[in-house]
Length: 237
Image (cartoon, rainbow, N blue to C red; front, side, top):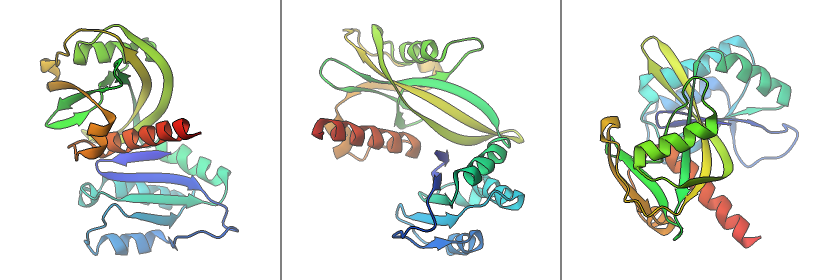
C-alpha cells in the first residue's frame, strides 16, 4: 500500500526478517535524524522498521502532517515482519483520517492515446468525488465526461486504487481514488470543465508521457509509471 502526503510517499510492506535484503533497515529516530540533515534525497527510498505500537503510529501520522517534509520527493517504506503486525498498524493509522472517495479514468482513444487534463498548472487524470449513493463505476464515467467533454466511454477493467492525504481545517483526509481503464471512440473535441479549474484537456501518447518531464503530481506520475510498466510486462509475456 502506498499513501502520498503531498510529495512524500509512504509505503507499508511485509518483509520476512529472516531473509537477506539489499537495503539498510533503520529506526524511526534514525529516520528523523536523516531527514533533519536537509539534503537532496534524489527520489531515494528509506526503509524503516515498522511497529504497531501507539507511539510509533502517532509518529508516522505526525511525519506525514509536518510541513517540513511536504516538499520532499522521497519514499519511506515501513517494513513489518508479519502480516498481522502491518494490519494492526494500518487499522489504527487509517482511523486517524476522515475518508473521502473519488473515482476516475485512464482513458484511451482508438489510436492508443491517453486523456489528460491540466488543472492548477499540473497535468493529471480526470477524476472526481463519488456522490452519495452513487455507484463508483458510474462516478468514474460521469467525472471523466464532465471534466473532459468526452463521451462514449466504456470501462475495460478496474485498476489499482491510489491514496493520498491532505488537511481540511483541523482534520486530515484520506482520499481513496478508484481508477478504471476506459476506452472511447468518440470524435468529440475535448472540452475542459473551466468551472472546476481545468484549463486544458489533451490526448497524449505514452511515448509523449515517458519522453517528457510533464509537470504532474507525484501520485499521478507514480500511478502512470506503474501502469505503463505493467503494460510492457504483459506485452512481453
